[in-house]
Each structure stands twice: as structure tokens, then as C-alpha cells.
Length: 441
Image: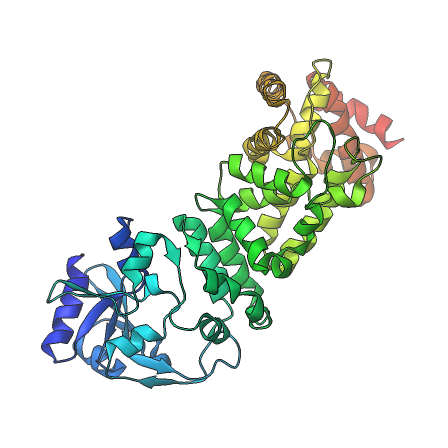
């Protein structure tokens, strides 16, 4: 235990205000995982905590929480408390300060998070069987699961997140209580849902996490579009239906959580673009439809513009099958569409897509290797990929054509870029100046 955390507990104890380490950090310590944020629960009231320590931040003082800054650590110190109704499905309408650690632990979400450490006595306080559930690898609500979920609409999603990240199961009654709490879940801000979803996708078992979302009914509320792929078989080139294919791709994916969301959504438009008999279906333009659907989902979950650009671009360009007969210009156009900054992501996504097919994997991986080698070769030629790489700029175009700023300038530059993609040797001021009047016409 870090020295500053121990000192905070000891100093409160000396004031006859017992304090205990609580929450997820205790769970992680018992599991042998690296602990995250340190939390302390205490009999001391917020004003007493502020009196005792020189540097404090009133993080949530109305609810009894003060952040103590000591020795480079920020520790949330919260008074033992009970809570009233949760009218908004996220925050208690009011809190009541209590004199009992057990009553404080009783209000927590899951038994594995309702364990405390008595630092002075070097003992574990576990009134709700959290250690037993850790051994059984179970996520179980403290007390009545419906009551816990109705208090905080985010708790059902947190249950899935914890089970996914820890590789646990959700206890039967706890899982059964989730569907009845969906009305409360709908009150949760999209930003909070987004962050929990990203934690699931960033964990070691993202495919299992998504399946738990489906089994619990939460996927219907978050990304119902994925459910259209269940039982929707593709063609002889795929072993799985559209939904299972997405999970398989997710299982094989390597990258951050935003990248993995792109993998999860990359074929989401297939059921809406299918044509032909089952097992022989085609999905023309499904990458475009999938990108459009993904854009709507990302807006709904309040993703940043940068994350949306990244995901949509990857989905739009995931259907690439390399042919050695491609010209260098075709290779440059592909790189230009994807962008150098997303090129590695694009390859990792296509690799996950191939592995998730369950068929023709080796030939697909081999094709990707050949494409990557070709791109490396072409990029060594100092390729021009964007307008700003051209040897002349808009000012020079206006000077040559004797025109004012306007859309014509951009059109000429775009035409020059298309020319240079096929003929990189023409990217000199002299050659491009000669071509400006031609492309203006």
C-alpha cells in the first residue's frame, strides 16, 4: 500500500475517525491485479477531512467526498453514507452520513466492490461475501439486484464491463435483473455509456463483452443495429453469420478501443445490402452503408469528430483485395483515401476481417502481405498523396490563369493531383505550370 494512502488512514484514525481502504482497489489487490485509484471511506465528515489535510479538493463535498492530495497521490476520501432515491437514475437525490462502515458498503453496486481493508488491524472486512464471489469468479449485486440497478442506471453496463474485463460470469439473479432496469438505463447520458463501452472493447475479452451486452438486453439499447446480423448468413466465403463474424473479428483484433469499435461495426450494413440466395449472397456497397450506419451510431454516443473520422474512414476502406496488376497510381490512390496516419490501422483491420471469416484465411493474409509490400515500395518513391504535396500551390495557379480566389483553383489543384498520382515525375514547378491551362480547360 502506498505510503500516502496509509498516512491518510492513520491520521484519520488518530482523530478517532476510523478510515478504511475500499472499492475497486481492494478487489484488484485481492486478484493480484495492478490497483488503480485509491479510495478511503471514513467516519470523518468532509469538513474534518479538510481540517486534517493541507491540500484538499471538494470533489463532491455535497455527497461527502473530498480528494486529499498527499505525497503525489490523489485519494478520494468519502464519509460513510446512505443514499436516498435516484430520481435521475444516476445520482442520489440526497445522502445521509452514517456511523457504520457496513451500512456504507451496503449501498455499493457489487459484492466484489463492497470489501474494505482495515489498515491498522491488517484485516479484510467483507460483510457481503465479496471474497467468495472473487473465488467463484462471479459478479453479484449487493442485496437485491433490481434495487441496485434502479438506483443507478449505469450499473447494469458496469456489471457487463467488470465481467468482461475480469473474465467473470454475472450471477444468475443479477443478470436476470438487467432487462427490468432498462428504463432506468435509458436515463444515462450517452457519454457515460460510450466510456463504459470503450472500456469493454479495450479489455482482454471484447467479443465476450459484446455477447454479454446482447444476452442482458443492453445491446438493444446501445447498438441495436448489430442484432440485424444474428442468423444472417453470408456466403461460401464465410463460416459465420454477420453478427458472429463481427465477434470473431473483434476477438482477433489488436489495437485500442476506438479501433476495435471500427472492427465491430465494419460489416454492420451487410443485412441491408444483401442480394441473392442465402449462402450465395453479395453485399455490394456494404462498406459505404456500414460507414453511414456507424456514423449515426457514433453521433448517438457523442464520439468526437476525430474518432468518428477514424472509424468511418476505416470502414469505408476495409474492402480491399490486392491485384498485382494494379498500377502505382492505383496504389497511391488507395493510400490517399485511407491516409498515411490510418494505414497501419487499415491493415490490422483487414487482417482481423480475414481471420474472422473462418475460411480462406491463409490466402487472405498472403494477399494483405503482398499489398503491404507493394505500398512500401511505392511510398519509397516520394509519392505525392495530397494537394499540399504538389510543387505549386493555389497562388501559382491564380497567377498563371490570372483569376481571383474561387472554386476553380481547388478544381485545378485536384486535377493536378490526379495527374501526379499516375505520373509522379511531373511534380515539378515547370511541368505543373505547363499543365495548369490544360486542366483549367
